[in-house]
Image (cartoon, rainbow, N blue to C red; front, top):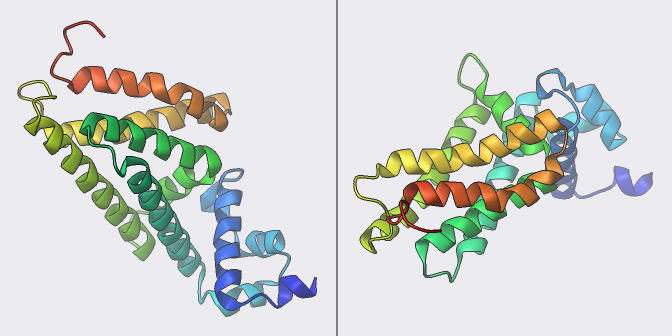
Length: 205
């Protein structure tokens, strides 16, 4: 118990964020209370608020944690891959693996976007999505320059559809109550996406 109570502040904050993301994988984020978070951490609400001034600050820290790690994961996956379509596939599979490891992530992010008025956390989610979209557009632009994409393809739509494919896998996993299974389904899902954007989409696989 003493080790729990005397963690350095930064480590306590990170463990709190990890606990929140874990809880969001099992419970509805909108109904998640600071009392529930504190119980999961084995601390009092007072101790929790020594590290976060408000519940909103916890959501902000959680979104920042997700953004940093997700962007680092997809960047590392694509690093050193010269073929832009292969890099897109590596990003896709890395993104899906990240969700399988942290099932609370999509529910947490979507929950923040559902607020009727903008919050700091919801703005951070939108910033994350824009950073992600720019990375996709960079790879799609390179694929176009190499003649790998079908003529007339709208790159903005292609980037949006990439994200939509990931979200579709997540939705299916939630319906089936099998988040881990998205890793197995991801390669086939990306094959369909690639078929829709590549220059030889009408030819053989």
